[in-house]
Length: 483
Image 1 (cartoon, rainbow, N blue to C red):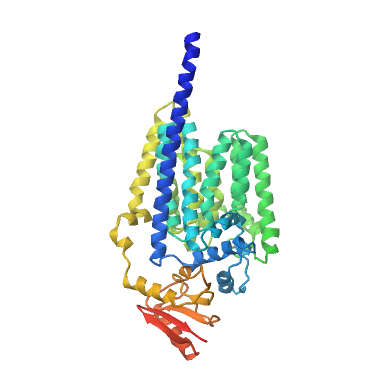
Image 2: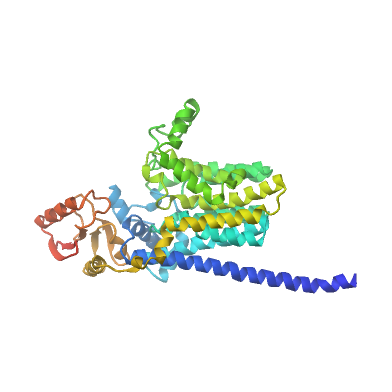
């Protein structure tokens, strides 16, 4: 007995040493991931590859919060025909963005959002590692953390401006991890943060409640289901209209029904038709496989995968083709769900089959899949020297930006606006009557929402006839000013 008691201090020291080593290793992975995300996004920004829709939009909204005002976006307001005082919460209800406002007291500009997004995506590594370590062990935890860090949905998201989705992976993985650790107060706080990310996150919390019911947590499950239903009604029926927004702005399901009851009726009366919409065209199935394959399909064995159902159906049942594919940031809402479900599904397979080594094998395979997908998605740009090269058009764009005085109101082509947003009121240059005294046009490259450079050149000639004077004209960039 005395020998056993004497060994306790040595065990405590060893456990403490293991915790310290793990903490350092996880912190190193997290910092490295943040560095990769930041490098990719800032290089794109410096080379004029970010856009006003959506980086300038969010920059304006967060700047409004930093000044203790409303999150208004003049750019989005004028784009929608709602005026300069348009409240961004009326489009997407994302009050969690207020957490970023204090960062603008340190640096007031869109670069702040780029770095914050990189940090938020990287921070999800910590709860994912903790969850995987508890379920499968430390070695699989490191492999899964790397698989998430290099995952293609994260790569797509950091390669495209800034979006509220940056908060989703860390809050989802924290909610799952804390619930599994039976720290239910912490899990509830993570769920509360998640519903503030976007107006449809209440549906994800609802499905988290269903997964809790399946796991035998009746009270918790019913609580999350109730909160998810109530918040979804509250945000669509009360909060968005209260700030002047239209909750039906992003309704993209008229082919199935004009509202939620009609859509539900369509699902009941014509399930085969709805199923056909879900899988056609083929790009939808391609996206589904790209989402499931990084977890090697074991995610389908876990109730956690239910959290992915609302955002997936929201995209694939819509009539907007831009939502169906693997481009942009949309899949980042799901990546943490798939990873955590894959971990849980693998653990369930281990219990069902009695194969104790399956966890490490699965984690190694998941990490290998993530590595093999890197060349197909944006992270591979970082090893290409041409990615960092500044071409003459970039130099011309920088000169055009410097021609705009501080505090001016300027209509700028989509990929130039973010470089003015920190010191001017930026609107999107569109094919409509001009309202700003300053305009930065691009007549050499097609840019949203224009259909062709030919029309852009025609519009510049029209502006000149309307009294705008050319201040700068080089490499396709034209700065116009009307006194």
